[in-house]
Length: 367
Ligand SMILES: *Cc1c(COP(=O)(O)O)cnc(C)c1O
Image (cartoon, rainbow, N blue to C red; front, side, top):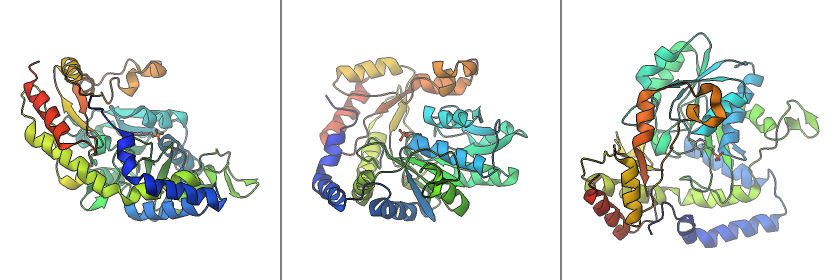
């Protein structure tokens, strides 16, 4: 069986360095908000080209706490609207509703699967305060256009970069463009820790200070609480492991890009539509997503050939049982996308032979 993602195989080449980093933390006696977190935050801020990175417990927390901080700083209030693509991941919508804000969905672009920029202006109302582009599958959204619309309408931009670390557009990486950005380092992401973790990035010093307080019970000074905060601290252990993973990040992305390029050149089947790429730098191939009218048959056929594939995601957020009050919403293009997408293995540790086997299997699929 060719697995969709083999995390053990991805991390094994770095096992020695990871164990050294873990030992360093154990021996230091410093386990919370110490030198490892500070060092990783600095490296990751530099990586994104921004002033500050705030290490947090997860990607979801990054989204939730950025919106919460904006409320505390008086930039948002209950009921304000957040524009987001209809095919966003559930975490994005949870962060919005958790903060008593309202998601306003926009159809995604049929070729990039990111927000369809041409539809944003029509979704803006007097209550709109935020645009939340989600750089899905590793593909950076058209940020220059989004920033222009935001500027013209005085809106905040929150990038969800959880699937797209390092993807860039016009030479600037995701996490650089928006007023704030959220990252997940969940183990399966392109930059993955060995447990839950995440981060926010920003150039805004006020937001930086609010997030640092919020992640630590709302406290700037020990035992004095400015906000009703939470415990969402990036751990020293995960920060130390992430510093190792960051060193090996680009060679891994290079492997992902070459797997994707082999698929793009090799898969030639009218029943399988391949993803679009504007430029090599814009895509980091967290997922390689194809489309087919015969998606379910394709998935079963691949499985019978020993190839695991997954669907990201089978059901849009507004159709989830958790959001019964939104179930009446309908975005026909988005729903067609959800019915047709299939993610092929894009594991950077795939062998050449496995990639060829997947290409051959796709080319022999007859519907
Ligand atoms: C993974 C992911 C998240 C959530 O990250 P966690 O660390 O699992 O909380 C948010 N948004 C997107 C787009 C993701 O892919």
